[in-house]
Amino acid sequence: MIEIQTVTFDCADPYNLAQWWSQATGWPLVDSEPGDDEVMLDPPADGRHQPPLLFIRVPEGKTVKNRLHLDVTPTEGRTRDEEVERLIGLGAKPYQDHRNPDGTGWVILLDPEGNEFCVCRGAAEREAADSAS
View 1: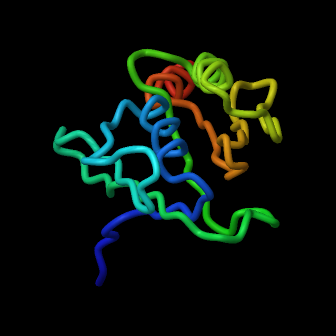
View 2 (view 1 turned 180 degrees about the vertical axis):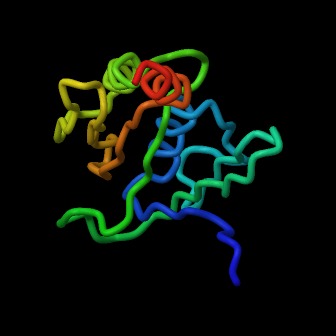
């Protein structure tokens, strides 16, 4: 058995990418400043186990599709579609849209360094769909 300690992003500018993810998640940066080679975001202490996000400077750029990515869901009563729009407003780029007419599906976005992540429906949307069927 193992426990995931952190989820690590290789990137060109750890501070800027961590700032973007901080805006997206609401998680604070841990003791960092511009130019740092490693920057960490701490998840909230809300009883859910979520590993911190760690951003590490690497010399090479991203060249192919991620082999690992985050699936995120909206909070604070937002829908998946509202969350997609909010993240695009923060600077994410649309990549692939896998939404279905019945409301299922997800949207793949790219963060400012081109890392793919999926925006899925939140718990409230899934529960509403389940109770309607």
